[in-house]
View 1 (tube, rainbow, N blue to C red):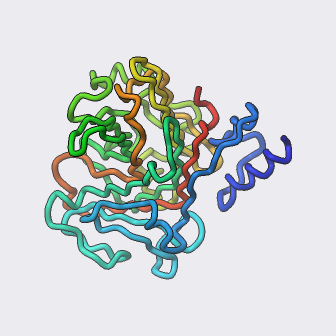
View 2 (cartoon, rainbow, N blue to C red):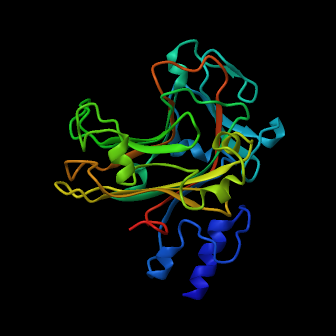
View 3 (cartoon, rainbow, N blue to C red):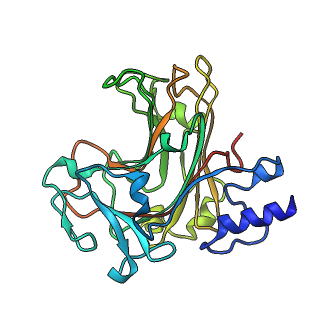
Length: 309
């Protein structure tokens, strides 16, 4: 068991800052329970293999950028970039975004059906906002989680997103189903009481992670930040769905969201279909200025990381 732990720790930490002894890192506690996760997918954007499993919105200005172009990466030579400003030239992608609201939609979707995800999945990615980025109200749909449809062209699947507010501090898990699948949104106070909405800065360990910076300064410093989300669908008819979010610099992991009573779906055949790694700039319009985001070192697991019930 000790050898297995060392092997998996090596895989998880490859290319990341080395944490202090006994530091928490998502993805290790399952070893204590003698459950070894399946690593379903990893992507570092070093070649075109990402195109088999990650599909951005067709109208998005998005693609791989490299260190030879002057791009910052979390590891290796490549990262995936998207530009969400309206009518904005992107100097790394060498394209101009649409001159309408469609520019705000990234839809950088990881195909979960390809990996036969049934109920639980864990997504880890390293995210970098461009220095100077700012978020307007109502925030951005950061990650976006989609279920299958039992009837083609009928919006009867679960549809939730991880909202990131304009303060670069507040994360919330929100139901986005247009047809009312799953529990309704009843306000932020109930979400906070259930661990579905919280600020990074006031979460245990948040101040150590921020290191004296404001959340906006931390996220727009030009450095990559690790986001790890885990989602377990509820059993139909029961309020037992689970969701968790960790934010980390590779050394100081912060458990921001932790919910255990979510009603995501109503049908047993409403299964995970897609996880958008970058969803969209929120609201009805795109920002009238550049808004660049990059991701790197994407991993998909079928086991629940440390701290999730």
